Length: 152
Image (cartoon, rainbow, N blue to C red; front, side, top):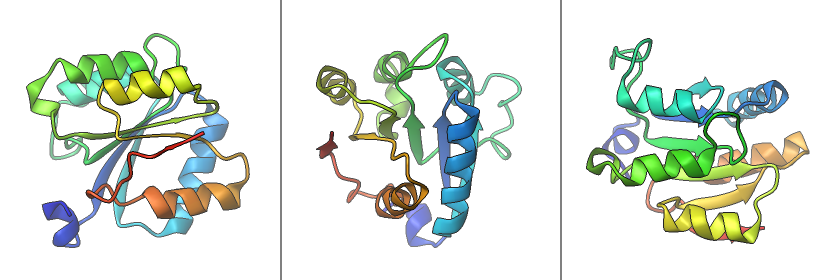
């Protein structure tokens, strides 16, 4: 369990998602899951990288701290989830960052590539809000128990 989780402090979750409808569903599911988490959304992989680098407007780490968990959509304009994973893999400062690929359709080859680049989990986004809530409650803790199992 991370120090933040052990201290019962809100986890910091960054989500790179380009579909506004999926953002809305995720926001509702996180709210209903009642996780002690600060959730920030960015619209694509390029913005996720800018956030992680601390580029403006993400340069104030008191407001935009390094996340405990990064959820990446695979298919986004500019840079997709695999691009972000490849960028993270090249930086030692993010070696401990927990990353999960969360996409509408995770093909087996994409899942293998994501795991080879450091993703701890790959799973398909449920369409049903009840299933989404259950998934968030199950995967919401970014501790060691965040499974590497691939759910396709």
